[in-house]
Image 1 (cartoon, rainbow, N blue to C red):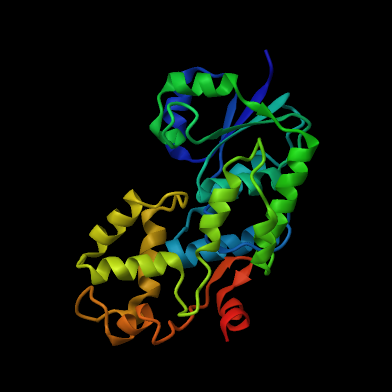
Image 2: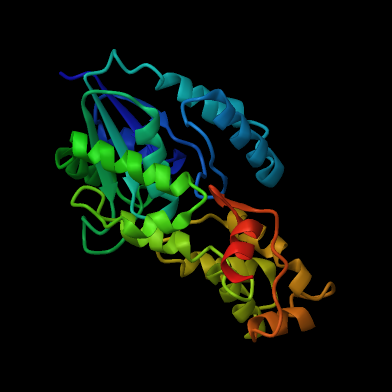
Length: 288
């Protein structure tokens, strides 16, 4: 029997995966690399120190060392395994983590399970399926070729660069068939001429239409987010960034918010990194 290592996309995947009885050890990739600064060589400690500082600042990730760094230490040397199987999903959240994982690990035999609509024609996450489904997916896992790994390396370099235009040249491959729509979603997070990106515009429009509760707003976004795959904490971060466009006493647009939506004013750019892009610099170069 092969000695396998399974790298899972998150803790929600673990319970049903264990029930499936698929042999091998488990490592969980616990990161949110679709948010915040993603700069420098991923194998170097400085990369992860920057990530730890960002997670601590934005999400209060005081357990980052034990939650993420300890897991990374388990996959720095994979020579004792016959095969490494990666389990990820179709959305932006997972596609970015998948690229990162492929650029971090080094092994001669890497196989991929990337769940989208393969089971029943409906887009699903690994945390939503039953144990028997994991067996089905495992049996159809895809061995990654040198060309696949080269694609992942080039795509990661484009994602982490300060020139996001590089990403537009990538098409989905037979192996990475969900990459193009996920990256299309990523590029909508860059600011437009009014300083807002499409996520922020959608939030303001929902508020304008009458949603006046933070949790209801975020819940609406979570139910209809397409290829983003973001969590509630990420949407609350977006909402916090939009506070200059909202009234202090209620979840309603103030005059600046209304004018931004109508293209009559510009949203002041937050000091935010979107992968390798510093948002204020991108906005100034693109629209001013």
